[in-house]
Length: 84
Image (spheres, rainbow, N blue to C red):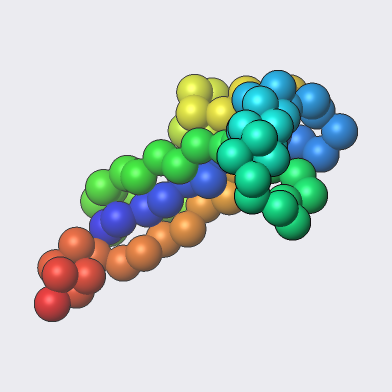
C-alpha cells in the first residue's frame, strides 16, 4: 500500500531554506508570493497490515523531528489500483 508522509516545520519555527527560496523568487521577478515553507515528502510502500499506529511510531521515532516538525500520514491505496 502506498503511503505518503508529509513533514513540515511547526508554525513559529524559523525556516531559513524557505526564506532563501522566497528571496530568490522575488529576485527573479515573481510577485505575489507572501511566504515559503519547505517540507519533505516521504513515500512508503507498506503491507496492507501496517497499522496507523505503526506509521505514527515510524514518524515519531525516525522520520520526523517532532520537537520542531509536524507530520501528516496519507494512505493512497494499493499499488495495483493506482496503476490501473
